[in-house]
Amino acid sequence: MRYGGEGRSRLLLIVLIVSALFLITLDLRGVGVLEGARQGTQTILSPFQRGGSVVITPFKNFFSDVTHLGRTRNQIEKLRSDNAKLRAALLNRKNADAQLLKLKSILDLAGTAGYKILNARVISQGSSQSFSQTITIDLGTNAGIKKNMTVLTETGIAGVVKEVYSHTALIMLATDPAFRVGVRIAGSQQIGILSGRGSRSGSLQLLDNQTTVKVGDVLLSRGSVANRPFVPGVPVGYVTAVDNSAGAIAQSATVHLYTNFATLGVVAVVVGAPTVNPGDALVPQKPQPTPLPTVTIYVTPSPSPTK
Amino acid sequence: MITRQLSISTPIFILIYGVQEVVVNQFRLPAGGFSVFLIFALVWAILSTPDVAAVSGFVSGLLMDLSPSASGPIGQWTLILLASSYAIAYFGSGNENVKGNPVGVTFFISTTVFFTEILFVITGALLGVQTGSFGQVLLTIFGITLWTLVITPICLPVFSLMHDIALDTRSKI
Figure 1: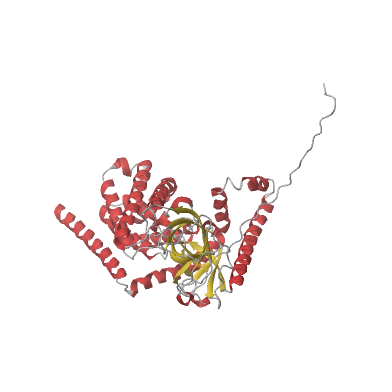
Figure 2: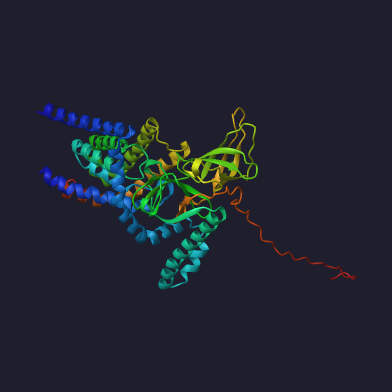
């Protein structure tokens, strides 16, 4: 009896393992039914994610403030003095203003380069359990979004449309380890490939072993055939460190991405590419240092010594 | 009996999955954050017999695979959670030091989450899933484990009660 029970248990385990391996094989062979299942899940979840995003936004801001406590200490001290009603009103206003500012900046960026864009709200951040870096936006095929379109923020590239559903789309962020974008260095026009590394810093691999890269070089997207997945001229980041190890075939470097992926609220999907390559038109201006007034005091010594 | 258990368990699994996808995934927490659904699946497994744990792990993994943000092929999480759930139930069965003690359960689940993520990275490497640099992977795994250590004691009474109601096992912690 006991052996019968153990045998049945073992059989169950084997059946489940074989089923899982069967699913992996089917998915890797590209069987459409399984992809359809994932799409179905997103279709069901998207209205809830949209609602959840609206409800949870104030809490998200709270967590964001907590994680940046050192930097927002002064702001918190100031807010403490306000009453609760004013604070809630300020919070709502702050959200709207920040989104408006971001949208304006995105429009400025897109307008300069001549990109035709669609603005979208981020309704869900992907889970990090699978080591992927994704977001879900509230626009899909019904708004004209297609797979492999460039996604922008107000400061530069955010990612690329990975999957499209009827009312939502999944965006692979530039920080995703599977993300690759062809880039060129503003000015020198040297080309290379930038890869995501799971954080805000990317890895640049130059294609030509004769060229060099230096700290501070600005990277722009090189553009793809038919402008998909990447339109040309989008700011990507700037070089923070250069790897000069001997024996390397081509130079590599570490790049700081312009986009702050921790605060993605609104993004823009490029649905129409410019007719003319914008070149280096979108290279961000370096911050100008504010001049500090200096006071010079001239002292003339008195003829007689003081006691 | 089985029909009753399934009819109660299924909505619970879907509910927690919904909470994970709709609420928890809205936050980009530092160091990878946590998965309330993964914690739930492992709590469910540790409170069950190895057979039930294997089936619940299979279903939980399948649900995680269906998540649009899952990077691997469908079946990867299914296989991993099946193995993790069976293992946690197998090693926990009969060991009252672990099962009857919330602190023990918390540590046991955090350790399992740690090994589950490592298993994901290893199988991911075999299946061609990009997981990032070694340092980033290490940071994420330790981050997720620490988050699990913090979140599990908060969720444990609720998940334990749900398990008790669904399977009527009187194994409430």
